[in-house]
Length: 87
Image 1 (spheres, rainbow, N blue to C red):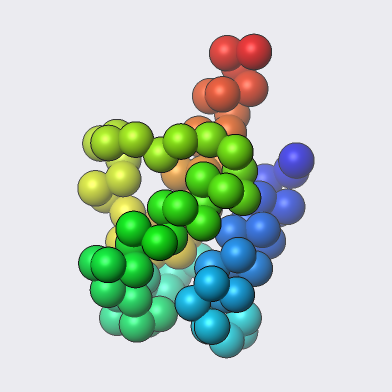
Image 2: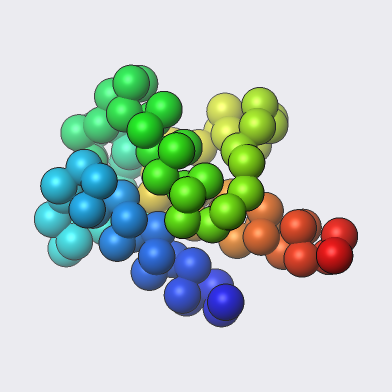
């Protein structure tokens, strides 16, 4: 799966789960202010990402730094690469 395919899957999955306009799904959009999500939505977001990418998102330091959709893209891309290197 390419980085672009990962980005597209994240955007599609989140847009469907939270009924967001796909046009809003830009890397610089803020998760809370821009997309209108709240802290409870982040729990659902983790579940959506785990289901889409078949890996667990644990209490990792990087998760606390996520503020934008681009941060989510980078987190998932890096996580997928780390998992692939372990195999």
